[in-house]
Image 1 (spheres, one colour):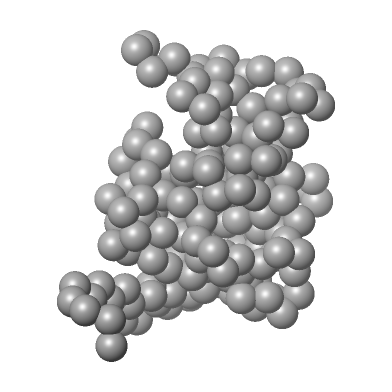
Image 2 (cartoon, rainbow, N blue to C red):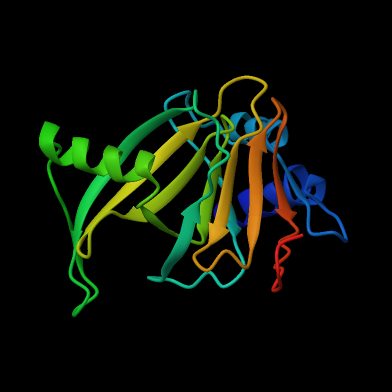
Length: 187
């Protein structure tokens, strides 16, 4: 199957089944992505993805954090670790070691990791996040939500935009959350 045929099939099988609502909710049909994965002949060890760009997402800009209300039982794996040179924009993979991974996981779970606004969703319903743990150490995480969880809260760094993302077994749902600021005396 050539690339043009794959794109046409992806449009029919996946994109046409993606739902967008007026309130900003997006439903990504993981089941349809899995059917597409099988139709183009990918093996079980190969993945295909949706891309979901959050508001203000820009290449190389890390401006999102995880909120406080997250799936504590989610399986979180570090998939890639790399050194990033902010002056040149070049990156180089780093070997995994216990101390570095421990530091990256600690920043992830302490809420100190900063993420870019480009989220990938694979055909198994997992989300993939890219993070800068330090000024020059980046990591890519793969997150598999626990069954029946309400996923992760993802917020713009100034908390002006918050959203929730979760997997219900058939689709990944992205839902913006209304953020209200009150400037006045306590009630």
